[in-house]
Image (tube, rainbow, N blue to C red; front, top):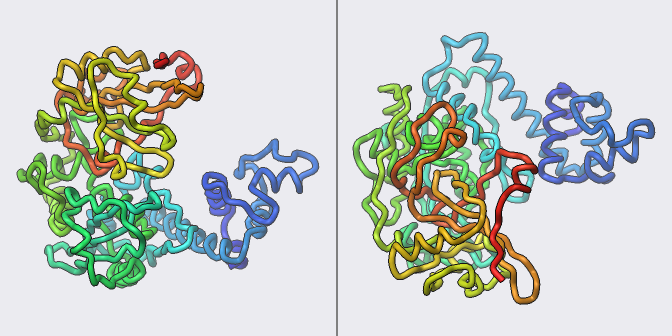
Length: 462
C-alpha cells in the first residue's frame, strides 16, 4: 500500500492528510502537527497547511501509520483518483454523461454533501466500495435503498431491515437483520418492527454488505432519501449516489434544509408515503425514493417547489422539545427553567444519542407553551428546518452549568432576510419532521463567528 501512496499525486496526498486532521488520526509520531514539530526544525508546525508542504513531507507523515491505516489510505487514493477522473470526464465529454449521473453530480454539489458524506470508513467493520472505471460513467443503472434502525444499549444504532429496488420497482433485496447486540428501543412506532419480528433472524450486517457489493458492481447508482444515514447504518462508504433530499430546490425552506420523504412525495408525486402516525415501510420508502428520481428525470423540476405542509397534531402543540442535553443532567432538573406546571416525557431512553439526549416538556395547553418559551432569555435562533429554538444554560445546585436547546414543535415567526439565501420565500407553516427529528434535532452550526457568540443572551436558571 506504500507504493500506492508513493505513486499518488500531491493533491491526493493533501486530501488524505486533511482527512487525518479532521478525524484526529495519529501515526507513530502523532498527528500532522506533532509530526511537523518533531521533524521540521526550521518551521515546525507553524506551516501546517498540507497544501504548502512538499509531496515528500506528506508521504513521510502518512507512512508513519500502521499497515492497516496505509491500506485504508490506499483505498482513499483510489477513490480520489476515480472522483478526479469523473470530474475530468464531465468537463471533456459533457454530452456523454447520462441524466442519472448528472443527478449524482448535483448531489455532490449540495452544500451539505461534504459534511454528511464524510464517513468514518477507517473504522473496523466499514466497507469502501470503488466507483469503477471511466467507462462506467456512461452507465445509468439505478438501485434505491431504505433502512430501518433500532437504538442499542451502547448508544449506537443498528440495522434491522434493508430493502433495495431497481428502476422497475422490482425487489432486489429485502432482509431483516440481526443487530447482534442488546437493543434498548426497537422504535416500533417508526420501524414497524418488534423483538418478536427479529426472533430467529440470522442475516447479519456483514451479509448485507456482501449483498450490496454484488448489487452495486460496475458502478451502479444508489438512490435514497437522506441516504447518508442509511450508509452510516450499513457501514458502507459509496459515493456514486443520488440523495433525493438534495436534488430538488425548495421555495419555502431554508437553503440547507431538506424536506421529509413524505412531504416531498406529496409535492412531487402527489401522494403520501404514509399516513400520520403510521410506521415506516422500508420497501415503500425505497420505492418512493426511486419514483422521485424518475419524476425528476422525466419532468425536470428545475424551479423551486413548494413543499406540502402537514398540520401539527394538537398534542405536539402542547410540547417543547429540549435537545442536546448532556446525559449527566437528570431530566427532572430541566423543569426549573419553565413557568407553568410542566412535566417530562418519560420515553427518554429512546432519544439518547451518545453523550446527549432529548425529551419533550409537556404543558397543559398552548398558551402555557408560548408563555414558557417566551420567558426563556436565551438567544433565539432557528434549527435546520426553520423552527424557533433557544440556547439556554441551567445552573445546577452543585454549581455546574449545563447547556442545551429548547425548540418549538412547529414553525413560528417567518425567517428574516439575513436567515435566507437565494431570495427564497420564508416558511410559514410546519414541515413534517425528517428522520433526524425522531431522535432530536442536530445542533445547527452557527454561521457567525465568536463575536456573535459573545453577544448571545443565554438564560440562567438559579
